[in-house]
Length: 358
Image (spheres, rainbow, N blue to C red):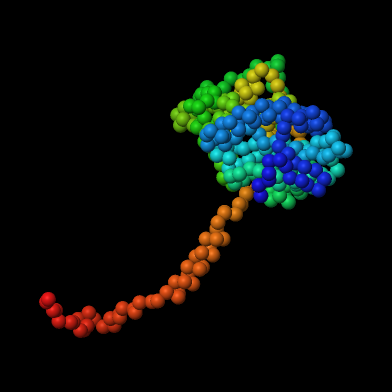
């Protein structure tokens, strides 16, 4: 259900869209790592509103909601926030990027559920939502299930620091190394479509331009020139709150032998300039986990990827169904014409009337 922009009153807090005056209130240790993201969202909010007003383009800036609790007559305290962004230009799929509660928040489950409900209710046109939670965070997983999210897969998080004393291995001689741009984006898009499970691929509903938007055209791929297809690729996903960059590494199912120096060369390319790289690996993918461990990457817990579909009642449908029922009743009350006789014998046995000329 849509929620007014000014915020809806909850039992002991209000939820409002992020404003500039909220930033000083977000001084809790849980919110401090998100300050650059929040400031960037505020800077992009006004240009996005102007573009949305004059064009049919959907807003690309993140949606940030803040839960506030009044203390006394003038002071307010930030209890939690949720950051959501769309995963495609069409706006059919959205992702819960961050959901943080202050250390002083006491009603954790109720507050988390309210932030999720209001975030989903304020987005129009979304058909699916994606969210992640630590596999050890039982309350968060329970809240997501209460909001209709279902687990899709479990990923193990790996953090890898490119060693400064080791040069990047060379790419295989039989493959071409190409950067991600508008010309090569279809190759990487087809590769990610081949490596993504069908049900998750349908929920995300990503197109080639969505891949370019999310990665900001930062990525590399290895291309089989004979077939003109990408067999391995890496691209930027987002800045990681723990420092460094979250990246997506894709290897074609038929080219698993590239998990070695070839894949390492791609990581060196995307990590050029220093900084840690964060990768996700499905817990059932033993080959990739062994390769990451041999590479020197560190495990940083597990995350459960959850998703839900949004079913919205179409306006006017009950009225249409009632109108059809009334039409059916009125049709039965209409005066009926006498039915035409149906011949039971051969056509030659029917009596013929004489032709009269006038």
